Length: 290
Image 1: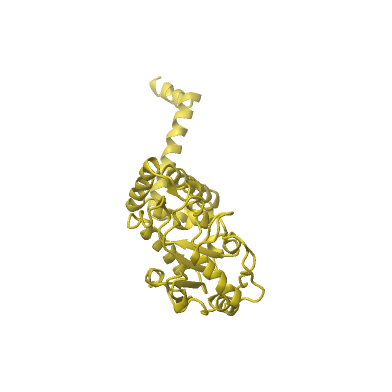
Image 2: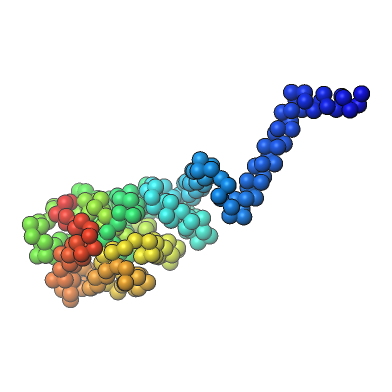
């Protein structure tokens, strides 16, 4: 009787569900162990895709909580690991604290504008700047660029002068917004991405340089035939690790009024960039499209 009762209980709906749940949990544990061992062969494509989606969603939630707002999806996938590192967490805490006490440029949603203009794999040209503009309504996440209707700063005015002599048909556009270049694959990247109002370099050495070094390293390692435009000693030092067997590097002095006459004016970097892109089988930049 006892045996019959046990068999009856085992096959009752409640017990059957309990046993199936145990079996399911056991299989889940096995799957986890297999994944930990690196044995993804036993997972279906649907399972792998679901795992990847869940991981991306978790990174999105985590980075959003840390103030990483407005990062383009392809850039987030490529650079997501940086957002979880200790230096970056400390950096976000610093910037958040600065925003609570001071005016910080650019606004939170524009810090990563440079990731919104094109996919990371579509970058063709990299221009390295140093620090965002620290006046109102200027910085918007692209180096050398200012929001309309702000007047172009002196360094950008010199860039326009060089373009007028280097690129046939180029005329000063009457504004300083370089979004038209960024959408074509020109990465306009500052080394430091935030600044306290009216205090140049106030967010220097807080962690941004480590992050933007990682951006440059990713591009150097994962893409081919980029043109890096390194103007001034700061940009040249930051670009020292670029793989010059895979990419092209153009160097000269900074376009600042203090140095532009010592080699920037007349460098013809814009036309040279297009020549190099064509040799690499890439579409040249329409510098007039601003």
